[in-house]
Amino acid sequence: MSEAVAAVLQLGFWQMALHRVEATVMTGNTASAALLSRAGFRHEGVLRERVLKRGAFRDMQMFGLTRDDWAMATQAKDPHTG
Image 1 (tube, rainbow, N blue to C red):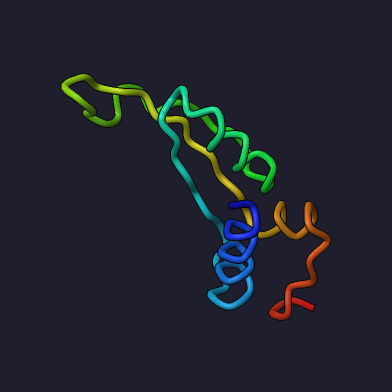
Image 2 (tube, rainbow, N blue to C red):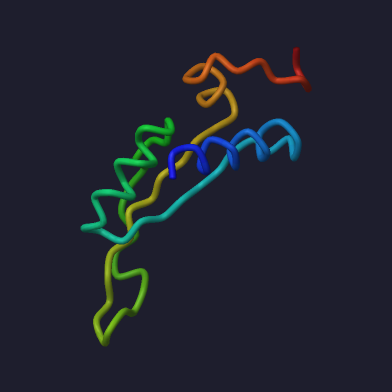
């Protein structure tokens, strides 16, 4: 899965020229949160009672990654900025 996340981020930041990518993970999904952290995402907060699942409202963890943070973490050279 790490390779898939890396490929999607490269596509988003290089080819689509995105400035920011966001992801949400249901509280308690530690594997997905760890995957995002390894990819360079920063935990930005909790969206309280954001989704209804099996009759109960659940909190979501918000993660964000900017192009600059991603480039520094991966030492990637952006073809749009040199």
